Amino acid sequence: MTLFQALALALLQGVSELFPVSSLGHTILVPAVLGWHNLDRSSVSFLAFVVVLHLGTALALVVFYRAEWYAIVRALVASVVRGRLSADRDERIGWRLVVATIPVGLLGLIFEAPVRRLFGSPAPAAFFLMINGLVMFAGEALRRHQRRSAGREDKPIERLSYAGSLAVGAAQALALLPGISRSGISMVAGLLCDLDHEDAARFSFLLATPVILAAALLEIPRLFVPAAHVVLLQAIVGGIAAGVAAYLSVAFLTRYFRSNDLRPFGWYCVIVGAICLILAREGMIT
Amino acid sequence: MRVVAIALAILFFVLGILYGLGKINFFTQSGAQHAHHITHLVVLWVLALLCLIWARFQSAPR
Image (cartoon, rainbow over the protein chains, first blue to last red):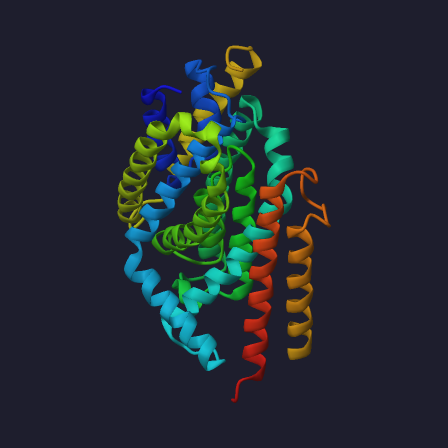
């Protein structure tokens, strides 16, 4: 892997992890489209490189939401010590995050390896990227329908039900499929549970933080394998670039979702997914 | 419910140890995937911890 490839993949990872366009799908499709056949996605060195990119992304999220995480963790600890739930806003958000993280962790543990084995090539990634776009359109349409016909109103994260939190977490597990975006699918689930776009995005990013961080921390031993040391420079540069890209992305998206919706990302996923699917079927990308 | 929570915590804790030792291979690619076993161990211990927290919520004075 060249330094240029490392930098490009890191920026791609940092941005696409948080934009609702699937980082996994893009890290399969972009190298295939660019003909970077020297990248062996199953090699020890590449996996170590990916661990560092995830660490960079997770740390960027922790830094961005540092004040919120501090308040949430403090409220959770106080709640456990007290042995009672209270009406505190941070505590309520914290327990909803805990509940939503359980299905992601369990389903990820069971299905990650077989799903990656089955669908880790460009054609399925392109197909699921299209599906991701259609899910975002469907989510926006359903939400509008819910508000028009049932007269449902937006509620803040702390008023999200535990069943709703569980549903958002379960939806996020669908992102194991390359092409399905973690943030996109959990935002759609949040919107259907009556969060507004800003809160759905915030809940999705807060929920992504422990998941990405835990996944990266658990894979840290891969960094100490001698074969991983050949990409040490690329990993350091990549980790920093992914972190900066992720920080800028989350800063942009939190502003964007104050007054915009998921449809532009839906168009992007459908169009890019369709083009890549055609290229894959024609054998032009492998 | 407190008893159920504690029983589940013990179950997850023991299952975690068995995964860590490689005695159980459900949902792992093969017996040799040590890193994967450690992942299962950590997740099961986290679940055990959550069950203990659940038990704590059942037993605290109202």
